[in-house]
Image (cartoon, rainbow, N blue to C red):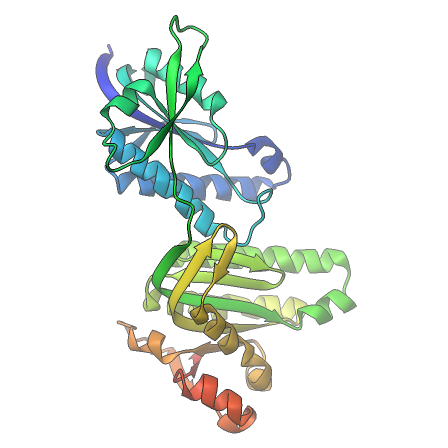
Length: 354
């Protein structure tokens, strides 16, 4: 037998998921769904919310507070954009969110009632990247904490009276991420692979490359911020996570190198980055790019992977590993200007996994 309980509902749904899924393999669909569910669940938990029902790629979450539900939805939208910086509007994953409140009959894994029906009706009118609230949810919202505006009145099927609908006014300015471990991985000799091999071989390399980067970030708490051709730009919150991720790349790149004769140049630096819609920029990103580019001078010394790591990252490492070494770079291999402005200025060493 079920019981009624006043519940704040946040429903999230991926926009236009069918066309996106049609171009994916079964493993890609499974990975995306797993990552998306983890993202939704973890963000909700930070605001005292939890998933209580799934509907395909849509999630129904329960909160004790409308304000917390709004803050969770705002963070979901902001982080989803940040995680996909560099992707165009047609390529990125977008969600819509609906927040309602009312009595719901909870019976096992099922939830029923007019509030559930209203949530489903409102979902159909909510545009991508928007957060819509029912009138009841708007009434109890802390309006000093979350800014809203009136959308319109809608006549929904099954409801005798029109429903007033509101939306959360989200700020879309530049978002600053501080104290991130920035990792830039760039495949070298990729142009040779494209020139000498068939498109099928190039495609196999890119798929293996992408799978390895996704797996590495998933296991070490990283986020892929941008993909540009054969370049992956990632961030990690802690230096130890970034170094462990590079260690994983070292251990797994040998087979890729053997099959495709493609190496990997990596730069690692600690700093800040700015995100605005699909744009990612900062001086620290430029420094990381310069560190990665050092690989062209030292490639003969490291045929598989060259990883340059700045002193800021090394200073913040909390753990030591016997199989990870930091070697000074030979200044004679680069120009005096590069040595002064990059290697010496940022106390750069080569990270080697033995």
